[in-house]
Image 1 (tube, rainbow, N blue to C red):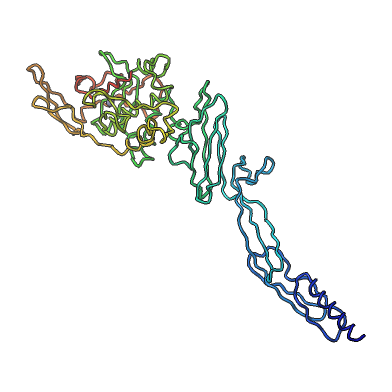
Image 2 (image 1 turned 90 degrees about the vertical axis):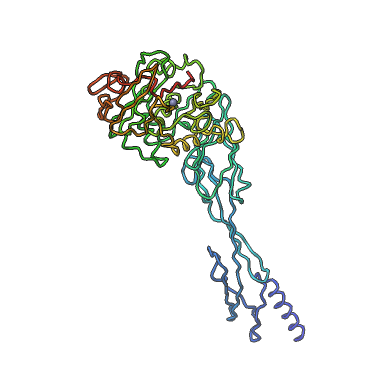
Length: 466
Ligand SMILES: [Zn+2]
């Protein structure tokens, strides 16, 4: 009987230890017939992030320990944000979210469990939808540091392209491969096909170009100065001297769309726009014979950048290359210039998948960058082709110098030094520019510089798109 009890007790103790939740073998206190019971493991599971040791003590003073291995992994999810739970309250649900899964595993293979903390934003994806369309985001390539974003226009809309603070070069390539190592802010631009409105899109949303008011010609000059500044060229001095962009009624045959007169005088900037052309063909697009541009804003921009390029930067004409604001037929040996022009829809966004509109071939940003890198490329002289009959005069002109040329057996001469230029056409600094020309002193077309020159001596830009 005593033997049997011992056997039964042994079985009980054995099965007790087998059924112990932690599986550890209890020490037997031979002085008691009561099985030892244990309290909770301490410390309890809270939010430990590294391995730790748990202990518990039995009613008979037995102390047990076990090792808890803590592992955690980040589960990255496109977005766990929902309509009513915009986690970062940024107004969109595009954000890439993450959730940390923590696994606690006890030593000896004695079980494990996992817990997850709350969802947090891993990358804030701020995608502005301009007008009407959608975007799909594919994060399957996130581990390689990229995501794919595909734009899909609504019906009656077309997708123009991507821009925004996180887009170095606005592009129409779709889907967009976006390097993602930080928060991103981009804009998907859609345009109504039937009623295109470019407000707030691309060129028109640019912090500098958007300051241009087509009804305030001097605003073009202000933007030009800012544009130069952000390309590393300081021409702020221009505003301290005579400067003007005005509409002029050219009263000679075959007038150009615009001209600049003082390109060799550093202290003056004067662009004269052909009043008739500007009002009838640029501002009134219905009458535009070739329809290169869909709106006067860009057309005027191109023309004025061309002239200011001559005047301020002494850029010369190019045939068919960047800076293509300066393209002109007269720079092409065979006269076959193909002007690279920018239309509203591709002015800002370039498509490197399409050779016709790639950055390489028509990239507006590249053209602008080149433009500001080529300043003073031309040592213009008054005589285009100085020869035995014409005296070449270097730019900028000295304060006093005389220009001579021969024609039909007669020799002509005139003073062309900087001091010979009239300054009575300068805009007043306080001027509120509009179409009415304001001059201090003389009137347009009635100043010394015009009176003393034959037009054949000017660089006259017959920008032949008209
Ligand atoms: Zn020109």
